[in-house]
Image 1 (tube, one colour):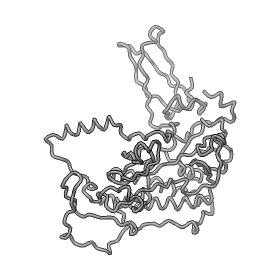
Image 2 (tube, rainbow, N blue to C red):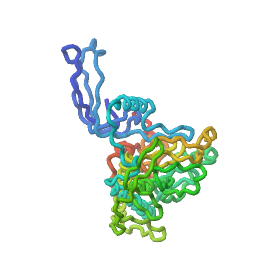
Image 3 (tube, one colour):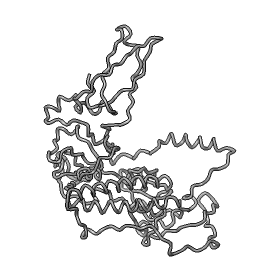
Image 4 (cartoon, rainbow, N blue to C red):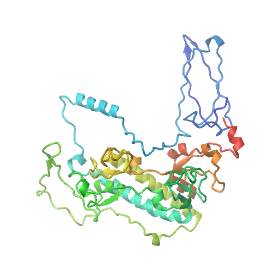
Amino acid sequence: MYAGCLHSHFSTTPFSHGNRPCLQFDYLKYSTHQGLSSLDSLKRTCNRLSQLKLRIPLEKSLHFQALIVKCDHPQNADFPRYYSKKEKKPFPIPIIELRRNARNRLRNRENQPRGPIPPPKLGLVVKRLIPLAYRVLNARTTLVNNLKKLLKVMPVNACKWCNEIHVGPIGHPFKSCRGPRASIRKGTHEWGKAVVEDILVPLEAYHLYDRLGNRITHDERFSVPRVPAVVELCIQAGVDLPEYPTKRRRKPIIRIGKKEFVDADESELPDLDPEAPTPEILAEIPDSEIVPPSSEEDIALLAEETLQAWEEMRDGARRLMKMYPVRVCGYCPEVHIGPSGHKAQNCGAHKHQQRNGQHGWQAAVLNDLIPPRYVWHVPDVDRPMERELRNFYGQAPAVVELCVQAGATVPEHYKPTMRLDVGIPTNVGEAEMAV
């Protein structure tokens, strides 16, 4: 039997019933019919195909154990789940597990000295992460500047009614629009030219002068400035921007109560050197000064640099979030950089009247801080996509798909959802014959 689009080798162990082996396996030749099987039947693939021959007596055919399939390289993974606006985001760690871990910590902490408190809880900055914060900020600026240049030479379409985009000269034919009057248009998209904000979701957060200070109230929601969420995370991690002043402590705070503290006396400390060298901070290029690449080689090099900046920004932000907590609302995309969320009652998600507009804060993950906007992967730019072959196409973040079409190499961890090894049928009749 053929395993369809799976290309794997099975690691097997002898199965026994009593003292005699009950199953034997022979490896057969790799099948050339790959990519035409059901994508939902199997979730993991490897490097080679194998076919199993069972040489067991008929009377012992019911006495066998489960086959263990090991895979080092996942392929054809499921797409990210689409959450309705009426659903609440799942917690990164389930509530039951959080409570179990809390009880275990209380049990193990009895008669034991308390461990060291992380510097951000004491009002200090982790010095070893300051260079990382500058690299993340510069990577974001490089990513924005390069995307502006790529959009001058690469076609990207955005729907006029919803937030869906498509990288390619012609928008995809799938009727998946959820915008206003989508039922009248039967879900058909109306495509237009995309901008950088369509590819990178403009997510902002309140800037905190003191991350240990009082929480922002509802009346202060218009007086506190808002900055991009990644920039605010870098500022709290040690980046100094003159337009966004931040309180920097040099001594840990003195706790009086659970929520009360006083700052330590820093008068005995020497003054800081104002002429000390600081890392360079890149600036965004205005749209009027953008110079697009002139040749295909320059476009490919620019795509590689853009993809590298995207990976560096996400990897650095993931490391910073482990030390500096980030909160996200479970009902809307609002993000707050700090130990606890603000009190502004500006949540307009489903049933916000029952919560009086208050946010449901919970721990954020990387995709909450830097949401990747997934688009359809176009296997052949010169050939339009067909609506009947939708199950055979893959998806990738818009930045990755744009860079790949511009000539960049596909990163390994994006290949599972891009479904690069799936054979796409040439017509609908061939697709119906797929197993």
